[in-house]
Image 1 (tube, rainbow, N blue to C red):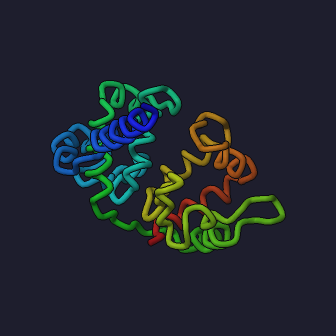
Image 2: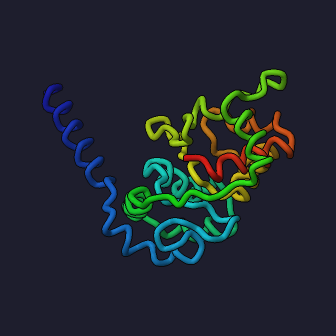
Length: 200
């Protein structure tokens, strides 16, 4: 009987995973409402809205779930995420993750300082290198749900780091980003964001 129960759980678990798997084609159909802010292919042209193209599906799905549940707050995204089912979120995530991110350009002077911080951190202030979690090219780590930063809008990155620093944004695992951002100056945040805009 115990073996039968375990087998049933395995089958149900596999079914649940299959149900939650995203369908990029369905996601494309559902993404029309997202296009106004994030672009039809996930490459936002508005510097305060994030690029979703090429982002890890697991990360996008988590953020949508957090917006829906209130773990991450935003006056625009909260209401947008509220009616989404888990399948809707998975489909949208699959679609946007399958798109190619458009790499931006960066202010060379600020990006040079940002490169040092991104690659080496600031040991005097206890700031670890960004690439330790997000990788040398900014590709992130989908297994750990660390987002891709490649080509991300610099103004958006600045806002997120400021929100982590102030405690406005709190949905980072183990408060990792909050603790790092708390040690960053405005100049460090801006230079890191500039470097990230051209990272690939």
